[in-house]
Length: 501
Ligand code: UN1
Image 1 (cartoon, protein in one colour):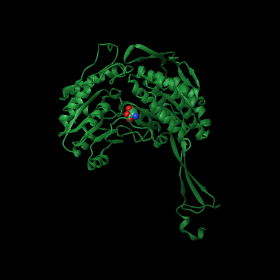
Image 2 (cartoon, helix red, strand yellow):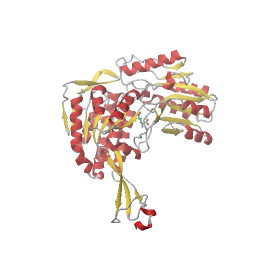
Image 3 (tube, protein in one colour):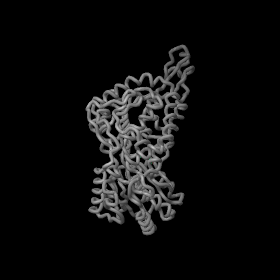
Image 4 (cartoon, protein in one colour):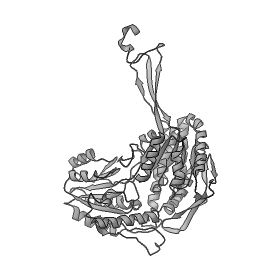
């Protein structure tokens, strides 16, 4: 690792924060390992970054779209070159296993490639007019300066989900990454610098949510906020943006479910449950936190799941063979343990895990055992609230209708999967599930970048990231009507009046 100390990236330069303060990023597998120190910015730094974005905007929005998008192709190629180095750093900074960090970087590479291609499409429509010698077309117009606030669980992929379409759209941006993964963010922004993205187009301000995130949301020159994170913070941002008439797109929590029907391939369902619940230590918006299992197969499924989970190795994500890496920080560890005790008080039964894992070189990290509850019921907090940790629970049902009703019975709706080979059950579930993403015989995690990503109900506010929809966050539709008749034509009037022509 060459550089570990970073200021803010504003107008093409790394600059110190006005506050003169810094904060450290530490390894969640070993808190004694410091990865670097970063700008602890305040409102003045945010203002400086927004000003740079405002100044860069007119030129950038006038740059041809394919040219704007070409930078992303170069970013994708550089990311490919640095994939291994970045993945290792990511595992040290964020904790997840090296294989998963590689997948995170790969998801970023895929999306940068995808958006690079989008620069050669960026389609609008042509639409016939009802009046003669008149023509309509629609085109996308950038929304302006945007604020991008990202979480720590996908420190390369999710920032790219936002920065890349913003760039193609013609927006200039200020990026405020999560305070747990500032090094990944800085190294990513460095790539944009390296490929020659003009100053001010992408700016980075590091710092805490209240000190650096809030002023970005409040800034009058920022036209839109794109935020991925918790429901509580999302609600606050939504309220602020409503008052200032900013566009705001939110990607928040979820309580994803895996439905297992009697005809499911049980080995597959068990693998899917273990992967969906415990990959990234359950710290994905798409994590499988509910297992809705038909009574006919519940005992067999439960036995096999426990066998699978008891073989999981917990430890440092850099070591081979580790399946369960640490959670992100002390607060998260305590939150997860707190939920586990809430679940027990509510009457759910722990079948596996339920405790912190220490010892054997793990004493300086934040490790929680893979935890499986049984007897989880729909009214329990552990069945309704997002835990964001390695905790899942089995719920019993007797029909596909009941399974769908239970799956739909939370305020969230990001990802739901059903394991069955019965075509009737497949279509019942597909039609009735209130989730933005529905999988059949595939886990709740692992969305690909060319399909829209986002959820219903409290998971978001109707926007989608990734896929062709990703440009919608950052553009306005402009309708252009061109009249070449050489006279005044009055819509809805002149077609019916023969004397008008
Ligand atoms: C997230 O957790 O916010 O579908 C994103 C998945 C990943 C993205 C998760 N491709 O699990």
